[in-house]
Length: 140
Image (tube, rainbow, N blue to C red):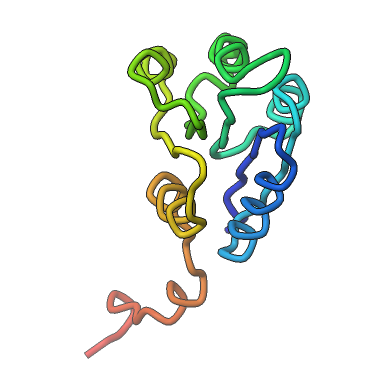
């Protein structure tokens, strides 16, 4: 089974790099974009299983990205976790209307990121699956 694909969109390259290192170490395939337009191009060319989206970015912000993402039939259902330093009720409400599945407030602990991502797209350990006895193939 192919590794689940995560797209991280954040104008702070250090945060994007940290997310990539943490999630790659857990078996996810991670691509990064430093702005929303670049993120949309990547998402359209190689649809991810999950998007980590910064809310505050220069120019095109996270909500602008969500408007365009949700208008594309092939990407409408892609889960998005919004990462923001602005967890105000207005921001949360608007993002929920655009079907954001979770929020992480900056600064965050890497273990929290891994926990939230794995709840949405868990890693399947192929070795564990292959070690399971297959009772329907044994005869008694």
